[in-house]
Image (cartoon, rainbow, N blue to C red; front, side, top):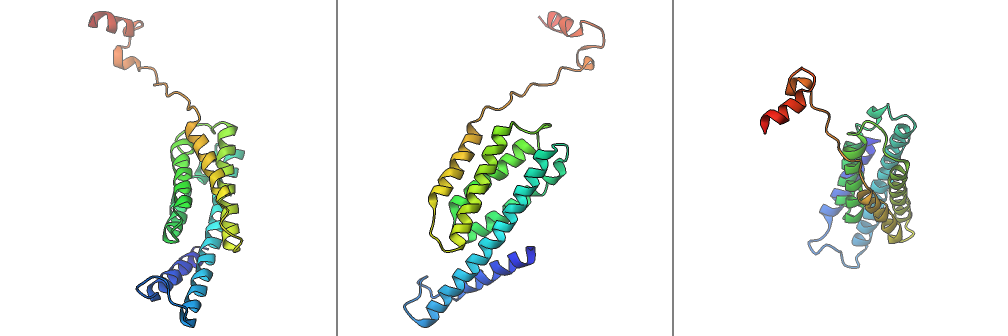
Length: 193
């Protein structure tokens, strides 16, 4: 859980602190050992992040099943920020930016609206999260750097940004604002003219 996650990041910090000033070591066995340790720690950080992203996804699925249970969403921005910090540390800016977009969507769309957004928006967000998960699993398993997965996640997030939002309709003026008698609003505009 959270302790494993922090321990992995601390171990990664120690490995980085032990690197020679030039960044990359020569061909020495000590530098090869350090690189292997760095890969191991990076893998652990990514593994923990995948687990935390799965928790984010589970909370969203629970919310979609019953939008009245919005409380499951409240811790998500914090969890996503923690995940972002890990990827910032691992120098994975595209993942950091994608997570920032998902976090903003949760903050601005899911936590502030009364009803669940349209299904197509939720599908785009889910696709973005799944694409990031597949990307991270592939990187963690040492099977390359499948940037097409991040391209897909970016397209999904971009579609969320481009989707038309419901217009914000202000609530009707309260009767006390214009007088409590019928026709008060009309009288207000007529007398103001």
